[in-house]
Image (spheres, rainbow, N blue to C red):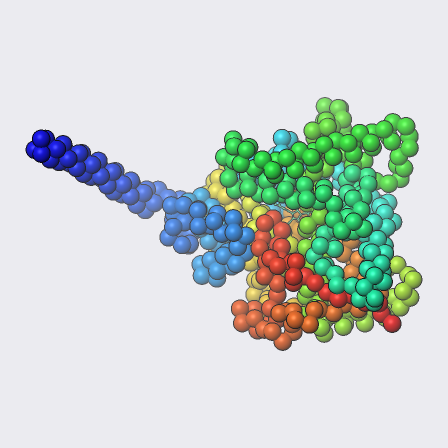
Length: 519
Ligand code: HEM
């Protein structure tokens, strides 16, 4: 009996040993194959980068999931230079000239990760097709031209700065002369109202109501799209994202209703056609087959406009506001300039006024877009079926190129003391450097909404800075004297994470200011 048991155990152990031996041998064989492959056939072996990048992109993807893409890419580029391998088939680029080469033509299409993020239907943003993108840009283009924007400026002022002023006045009265305002949330509500007005034909009234459920649905859509772009397999497991998908469905129904409403206005001749807004352009456009856009097509475009237009612009304003709080000299100069040109508090400063008269203020906006580009870590392109010659390396065909725009914004050949906040770089002759920025991307897929975003920023900021006093909370950890060694001893800036846009981590507590009337 004992002998049988021993023999049985011995046989089991030797079987396991045999299997382990086999697995080890297979692993060794695989390792040998990888080494031979990467030494002899790997086309990217000349590109510098961490050792793991030859075998996997997981450490890089992991940092993206954590929202740490910027800091991580910065470290890699500091160590390895402007072209860094971050995966077997992925390269990160940070050189201004290289970024321009890639972005200048349709030859290097958006990478496949964009299509994983798309809803049911391709849209202006997710498409990899040149023809499709050109078509959509043509169809919606008039809404973003000067004529289009002029036609909606009154509306933008109404739902933007005017309703913000109303809200602030009300809250100051309620608070006996002082309103503790979360500016991150406030700007987000404001940009939601503006984009909703142009894309749905009605404001969400988020400023008045301190938020609106549709804005939460938009955020769920952003999260779903980002997760699907990073983990494409998630589309086969919809239950994992059930709550987020439900929000997305709500958003789709909401958009559907907005289209129906506009359709009725158009059919009954009640729509003011002198107003060229985003919804109008898509509803009246035709595809090359002569047919109007389907409901699915319009919904896909409109939802993307919300995604593209809300957080991008509000995050830009948040950073600008924060920068003013830690650079009081800059803040004072901006306010002095505004008071000099527009002393009358009853006068509403317009987009054109700001462009024509507020050179220093405008320069602070661009310097902020340089230092803290609001959209980061998502510009991914394909090296095409031919490959591409970059400044100091040839990249073979079908490699994913990750464009690290913040790195280009810190290129010391172009920007002296890149960590310092120096608006003067964009003044006078320096205006020509605006085109070296990638905050709105560059080239053929440049952001078509950039002038709308600037219209919002250029009307909201000067008017509120002229009319109110803003003071940081007394216990704020961000101040002109709290200096960050990693920023060349410039003031600490809000800690952020990048998920499509660069969001301050502790916006609830840290993006807070005390507002009061100016005497
Ligand atoms: C300060 C605010 C904004 C910033 C920083 C910004 C930035 C960007 C960037 C970097 C891209 C390129 C993304 C890529 O290639 O992966 C982009 C594309 C786009 N943006 Fe904006 N954006 C802003 C506001 C807006 C607004 C207000 C709208 C419209 C309501 C808008 C609509 C779009 C569209 C439709 C695209 C896709 C263009 C294409 O692929 O052809 N953006 N934006």
